Length: 256
Image (cartoon, rainbow, N blue to C red; front, side, top):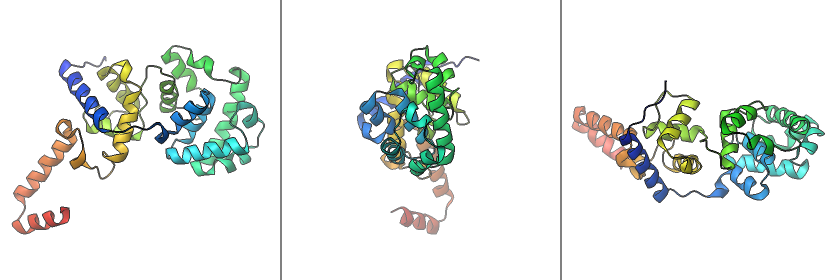
């Protein structure tokens, strides 16, 4: 069934994005994929650091990438001829390093055999086909594919944990939506020219303000447009209305 978006939803979504652009700072150096893309313009290297960032911070992912590049080399040729245990040793800081080392060696071998040592060919396909082909590679799911495509300016939106949480709290995606549903909801609400900036803004907002499990709602620039905050305020009002004066005073002291 096609998603039906009314104009009022798009207007609200547009206003949310405008407020985030005005109030949230996005720095390329905070995102490992953007750092590597700027330094190398090599989709293979960007894919490698994106794989590192799975279940790992951007700081640790970039550290693993730099150590691997120094000790082994982040190319299909060098990775394909290096022992898996040596790759694992170099990327230990990235977490799940044994699994990722096996995936990298296999990725390197596939790139050499089928993609002429580069992934440029895949990125030239239409987005849906490129997403499918990328997900045929080891350790590449929809999010990793979307990250790589987005870095290269293709029309897609990647949805990580932060983007998922912020989207649902702001009422831009259904609460029980899975990855593709959140991605589709955002792509219906926004214009393609905003697709690249949306994940970066949502991630920065999620890291600093809309955190889990303790969001800083009092400092949220989208406070008036956020149903999550309004729901919390209503819940707190109901608790205060039914609480005894003694409990209210204790609550005030805890939050002061």
